[in-house]
Image (cartoon, rainbow, N blue to C red; front, side):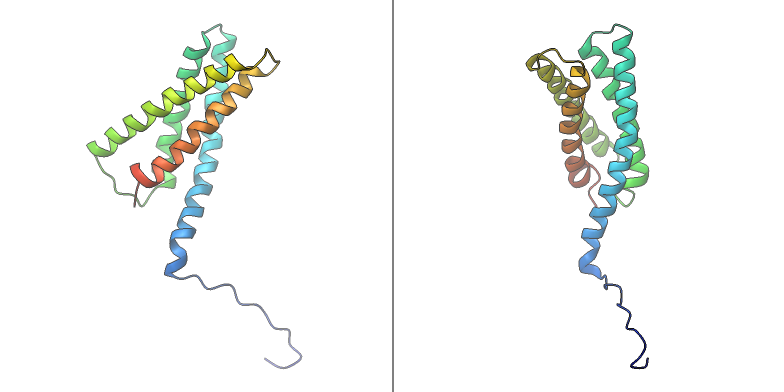
Length: 149
């Protein structure tokens, strides 16, 4: 390189110390993308069942199960790919986690609807709060317990 040539910045070196952070960033990005798709399933089924006249907690329960199943299968395949495959212990952990987040999701949804005054989009707002709560719990537990590396 001569004195008249512009200098180019070298890309930052990534080494073993950066691997956990990059792994977390990749997992979080994949988790969010899959979460959006799963949320569309959950939200769509929820409103479809409500428009069919189903009782709100029943509609939320069914939509949660379908959205969560979508998320679990896709996250297992694309997000937490390097994780130990487990077996019965992983399945038991999955059942415990999703049983807990099922109760949290349906409970938070019902609580928000109870606390809100009647609004045009009250069911959507309640769904959003319940989904956000369950999603945060799921990511933490999936990352560090169910699919731990």
